[in-house]
Amino acid sequence: MGENDILIYLAQFANNMIFISGPMLRELEEALRKIDRTRWLGAFDAESVLIAHELFHYIESVAPVIATRTLQVQGGGWLKRKFRPSCSSEIGAFAFSRRLTGLGFFPRPLKVVGLYPRYPAKAAELVRRVERQCGS
Ligand SMILES: [Zn+2]
Image (cartoon, rainbow, N blue to C red; front, side, top):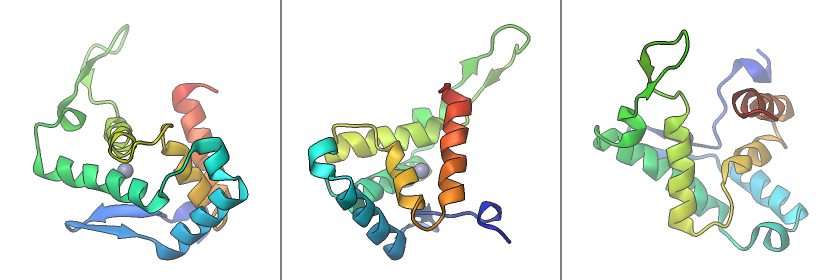
């Protein structure tokens, strides 16, 4: 089984608990130290950002009418039906963690930085997926 065949989480909300991978968090912190995070991104605590992100998923689980679960977008052209944007939950979680922790940037790239030391192919695949969804 290669690294692209397994699900890898830096952090996860499951079974009403928030899990943070200690080894991956330490590697994320080390990577942030190498790029001089305070100079480029401002001061922040990566673990707090991860916990805030997963806290949003908890809130989604207990608030069934939250917009990230109920949002419907009307398709255009040949796509006549309404659909739920597949990444609305993740966008909401990243936006929530940004607001809650006072970050000066959208934290999604932290996921790539956190994966890269141990799972470089998975990190590269995540970048390609974002590029496909959002353009390059
Ligand atoms: Zn998430």
